[in-house]
Length: 280
Image (cartoon, rainbow, N blue to C red; front, side):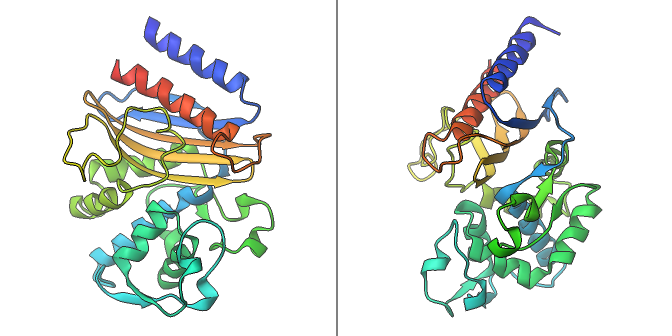
């Protein structure tokens, strides 16, 4: 193990020791195969990161001809639920294209949009698709139903860092269904507006595309958060390599939702350490 890798391992150990919660991490350099991991096979809550698999099942069904991204569906009152998103505050009955519903589910982690798609696709079908990817522990347990979750976010969804990383790798490599399907998934995830976890301290301008500015870093991610839980799953495209990163924290003593939540800051520090190692 080289000196730079040893220094990264030391940094991660130091960050974890000072965190107070638990970290499950899997990082893979898709160009060299190098892996960095911590408790990568622990089954952990994913919070809203699981919504990536809802998007994957939607795109699989679109490719099969079952649905079209341009077709519309209504927001039903029974699908509106609290938590993240904007559809909870809009009028029931409004009609949206599936592409917009999927985009809201990912970029704003909209819980109502998630329930709309889970109802459309079927929870069992989403889990069958997950199993078809070779993932044994990843499961969407419930749609967003806070009574069913009852304070335990593991009753919503679970995975492992290794399994989630494997799924992201299939998307990054274009091997899930087809390259056009994967490109659509990446295109939606790249519009992510929650950038306060792994990307928190990275040199990234989320408005570079709109401002027609060049950028050396692309971030394609989906976050998840709950009391004591912060999670981020990402494809990071650096000038020298592409990384898939799955990072899940739990049991954080800071259960607040402040901008400086200890779990959020911790993941930002982890993200920066990983970035500096691979970008250096």
